[in-house]
Image (cartoon, helix red, strand yellow):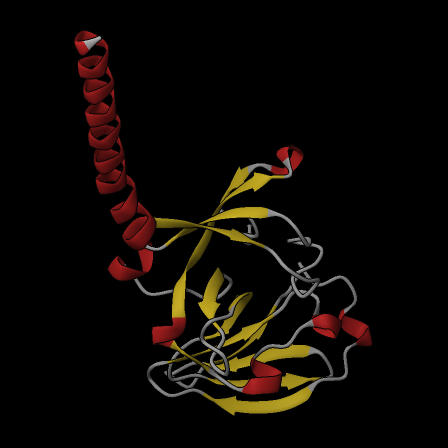
Length: 185
């Protein structure tokens, strides 16, 4: 009987050790490197659909700045406990202008460029008209499905410190598994 209790104690100690080691390995990865994200809503359709499961790369933007066209996950500026997914349209220091659904950027060097948005299905039906000047720590983000997106057109520029990371891997649905989903090619 005494040997049975000793085996139970050893088993319990091993389970506790395994749990502690697992937490020490997984927690830093989850906090600093990658985290899961489930797409909610239609704002990024058809690029991302409701219920798709993504892994967010939280490390890249600590080493390099986000670029135009990147699909990012960020804390919603008006309610930081909520997370949104959108595409970066305007970079810090730029002036962005939407004219009847077409996107024009004046870069920080004064060059004006028209952005081709092949991921938007019906640009001609958009009648957005606005102009936004971004400070040195702000981004302008837009949903791919402009008709169903609450984005920088509605609530303004995104402060850079709200960016969590970029969409790195799509895991679900299995038929659409891929690295850097939504990347502009």
